[in-house]
Length: 491
Ligand SMILES: *[C@@H]1O[C@H](CO)[C@@H](O)[C@H](O)[C@H]1NC(C)=O
Ligand SMILES: *[C@@H]1O[C@H](CO)[C@@H](O)[C@H](O)[C@H]1NC(C)=O
Ligand SMILES: *[C@@H]1O[C@H](CO)[C@@H](O)[C@H](O)[C@H]1NC(C)=O
Ligand SMILES: *[C@@H]1O[C@H](CO)[C@@H](O)[C@H](O)[C@H]1NC(C)=O
Ligand SMILES: *[C@@H]1O[C@H](CO)[C@@H](O)[C@H](O)[C@H]1NC(C)=O
Ligand SMILES: *[C@@H]1O[C@H](CO)[C@@H](O)[C@H](O)[C@H]1NC(C)=O
Image (cartoon, rainbow, N blue to C red; front, side, top):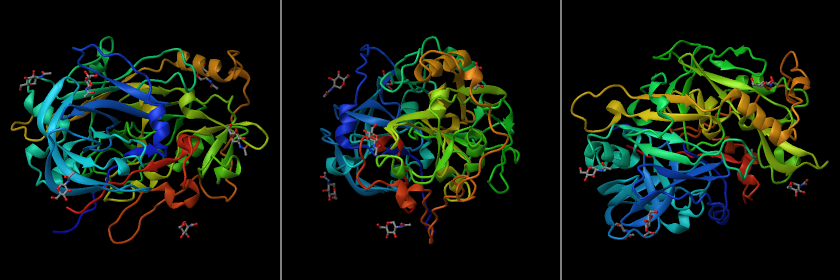
């Protein structure tokens, strides 16, 4: 059997355990009969949900980019299957443990003998998600299921729920909140995850265009779809020409980018030429190769620094629908000062992982990963369709529906209030430059960051550049140190 590299994206910020726990806030009350799970939002960086295993609760990262459940801690009545599984990280320690089964209670559903990885508390505390991760991706990408011979009984939680509760429609929805601890905005809501039903007042998501899920090789199956041709509206209101980097794409035209939606990926990953088209023409923007030269806590490399008061408008277009992104999601205040005492704001759409991923057939074919800073602008529905393992008859193709939540006027006012003290001077902000500024080294923006190493092991890891991987993350580093988590193993 040919060893295949299995790889999924997940993301996180380098976060100290203590910080993560302190910030674990938004103690939203939940009605006992409530079918939706409230999400805990950690500074708009990470979103957690409670699951119960063997009767004990765990606050786990909500991750549509992976397909396995792991927890760390005591699980009463757990059964050790004595099968070792390892989920390796690009930075830091791999998540390793024995596959176990226990009773799962999640979102009002109960599943007996749910498979999961039981990880030591010590290992888990080295990550940004000390109690675990729930992968909500397609079961074909589950490593645990792969290790257990792809049997139905080894399916991840959502598949088990859909198999068992057959009258429950096989979809989940995700609403990511905005956290008032970051920058005050007008509209606050609780982040929520629902299974088989929509959040009241947001039922319109069911009428949104059905975006077909791109079908990749089974082991790389993601929640991915096609962006419309040239489907990005830049800050000047004009479309940005897009070209996929995937050779001979089996779906879509060459102008259509292959986009993955990942609730576990804080900073959207976008090809370099698009990053330059969005940010490179902003007067006063500068391309920073080494963030630590601005502030030692800014352990990040190759990004555009932006004037904090510069409003950037960008929209993405899927199936003819425009999805505006809040200017506060595009130009992020890092809460750090440079040597002159100036606040540092950073382009929050970046490049690195996605641009290299698309050239790596073993990763699956992707151009962009739209993470939380995009998803916060939408209410998203993921319909599993035939992805549900073990369905005997064909139930239909999986699809994604996105309802825009970002009213252009409102997201503009939020920016004005947060950054301009409520006085709308955006009409007189300096006009965009005619063409993108060049970088100090004359290279295209954050060009290829291809971290491929030989022999079938794969990284898509911006941390290969040592300057972007702080050895001892601080709370500030948490704001900017993205890491791609690689999960790989041998079939
Ligand atoms: C787990 O959470 C549920 C719902 O919040 C609560 O009712 C239950 O008491 C918790 N269980 C434990 C063991 O903490
Ligand atoms: C699970 O089983 C393996 C192999 O039998 C064993 O080495 C490991 O210690 C067990 N784990 C726990 C937590 O008991
Ligand atoms: C799921 O199905 C089980 C039996 O198959 C049932 O007991 C349970 O009430 C159902 N749960 C929900 C939330 O529908
Ligand atoms: C970095 O930012 C922090 C937080 O604003 C600030 O306290 C510190 O003085 C800054 N460091 C430098 C070298 O400017
Ligand atoms: C951004 O979009 C808003 C809403 O359409 C608009 O009022 C504002 O002028 C735009 N800002 C810039 C800099 O184009
Ligand atoms: C990165 O760090 C490793 C270990 O500290 C070192 O061996 C390597 O030379 C560094 N690479 C670069 C490009 O600095």
